[in-house]
Length: 354
Image (cartoon, rainbow, N blue to C red; front, side):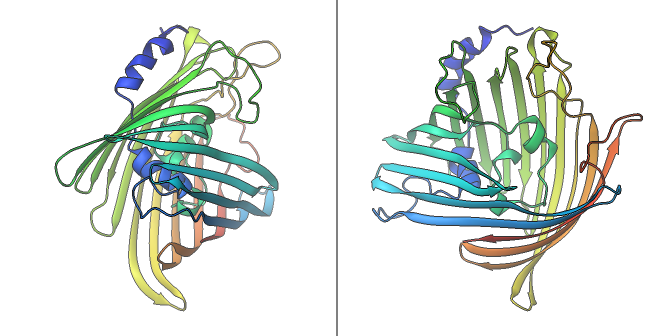
């Protein structure tokens, strides 16, 4: 259906119809970095952090564990009113240290911004939620298995001027296809991504495309999201399609529907309570890497999940602490082998953001 040269043709379209309100909303959610021009200029850098510790109990009998799931530290600031930077490191991602983001950005005027470095590809919605802003203890299948891609490259974003209470932002970019930990490889084929987000009132619509080649097979993705925030409610649905060229693997589908209801409370130091529910699922999925026989294989079997949870929060300006308890119920197809830790579980976690 799609050949390797198709993404090169996509590029011109991406740079014209670049795509993402994530530049204004998603990147800030993922990194907590301020968008250029949103605050008074200052040379003084800002330091922020997010600590997420947890306990998980596997209800299938495989045991339990404690984790420091994330210990992220960010440094961001401006060197001029139109030039900013952002660096993010996870000091303890399940015991490992990772450099996640390192980029600089220039506001070109007229709503255009240019960004270069290492950062998340502009595609998808749930994958852009940062650990400090998670609604559930564990990410959705869309945000973790199907599309969780950072890369080294450059992107251009554009905030379209619209009437009051409406926003439209577009973003698109070109990236190395190799792992973000390897910047040395010379490549002939690149990865591409773009996204557009339109907001009116309390409704937000997003869609985007992404084309990557992690090994030898190009993979093309399409995504659509609807978010509605009436009062204390947040309701969101997202669908993602992942197509493997040359029929290398059956197309993968992912979906996600969740709701959150928050209200003010007074329970000790905590001043907000919220309740969450989620249904998400995916069909058989390959990450795009070949096995010893040189063919793609299924890394993650088809599954669905229902999650129910509750969170107590202390919120004061940009600082907050969440104490969360989630129950996850998984549904696999008959005869499927359930990976250890990927079955029914209870997860309790504390998240501190500063």
